[in-house]
Length: 281
Image (cartoon, rainbow, N blue to C red; front, top):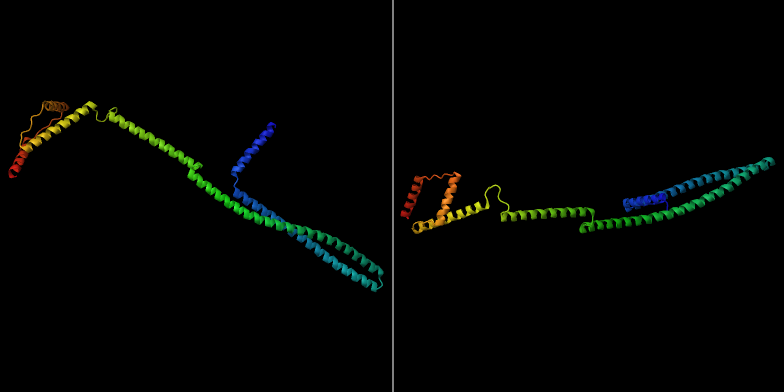
């Protein structure tokens, strides 16, 4: 096989593949049905033309038969008048017309035979068209049912192109979600271990731990004082650790420049109110 032959074969195969993909069975069946109906119309027109031609020949034959009858009368009249010459001429015309009539009868018979054949073909073609029409509708219904079934199956199984796009979108969303979850878990773990410090507070881990211990110690001391007051006891003396912690706290407050002013009159007034409440109770 030469290069040109191979190239022609490849091009034809490509075109055939494209046509197969583009071909719609329903449209093809409808087109074939219309083609057959067109052929039926051509046959009907052919029958009509033959019938018209046959009618023309029959009319011509009828006119010739009338002329034959006329020439026959003329010959008879000429014989009655002893005009053999006229009678001979009339009979010659009669014979000529009868020959034409015989020829026309042959043509008319041929047209009639052709017409009968066309009518028979028309009936066969018409039956074939009706059968094809029934088969066409059946095939179209089967094709529509198969196409619908395939679409439903593709939607269920995700085998279709659209469902594949949807599945890929879902997979990408799941991957991004898993990445964000892993990042959030990693940040939480780093924050718990102290690797990531609070950048807004500006304090180290040690400073935050000391503040927590100081706050707890102050709460415990205040609780002990309240309990002693309720029992009528004097407030317990702070321990060495508590005194050191208070000293550190006071020093830190002084270093930070926070001055706390106490209103003695207000404190005395509150103490008097508490004392009056206890006496009235």
